[in-house]
Length: 378
Image (tube, rainbow, N blue to C red; front, top):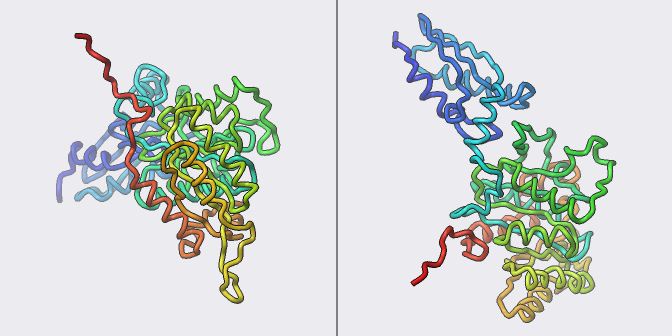
């Protein structure tokens, strides 16, 4: 029979990731003790970040399976304990560093950030953003979604999140659903969905800043922000806190909606942000009876917004795509089942997936990036 060694056990455990932090548990100092006794009995003690860790079940299962796969192991006993305050503080510093800051502003950070905006409500911006985030995750991207609509937060339901974030010594670990890590104001309200958020401007800025600095996002390829409609406090704070964020304007084909959407895009001129493009939502769809296109909300709004912004800003603002109207998109949002997952073959899903592919391939520019360089005098 093969002799099982401690090194073999640690090597196996190095392939087990914490589901919330997305780093190996060995790297996070979560493996407290390894005891091997004959014949092939292995007992390990794993330290959870907090006593009420919602991922204790998956962690125990993953540890058991990883050790059980080692040749010669006949029995695995896993004991779950909890980190001390000192160990949690050390973990927090290991993940975030000694100082509190917005990680996306660190020198060399390559996360692509898109702030999804609209001139008015009712254009389907949030359901579109959620599906866009999931579509990006389905192509292998590490995606985060910040529900920056502090008053009208709706991302948790639409994304299918069913548990609150975990707090570790003041650091927030965001829950994940459909491959997307997301944070929202909802779990921080004792009164639940019906409780209003009565914040004024400075408090909105502080809430957004906390979501960016207190949340451990891990290493993201793409971060999406679902902004509230209009050009108010949150949109301005986003530009201040994340100067490298690129704006994406969502409109419907309706000309009245398009005129308002242009204002949201024109904010980029004042905040010195780059405008990544325009998405037309609720576009024409094929009639289920005759197949002819049906323009419920008119036509041309997305193209009009892109053309007007290009002319006003003196730069090319592309129409990233048009998503056809689909009642299933709304139904999926209400059920917490994004359409790009539940029915990827529908025209709306294919349009969103195509837009996601374009954003994923887009290279991040140097605008707003901290290069950690300074001029040298002569």
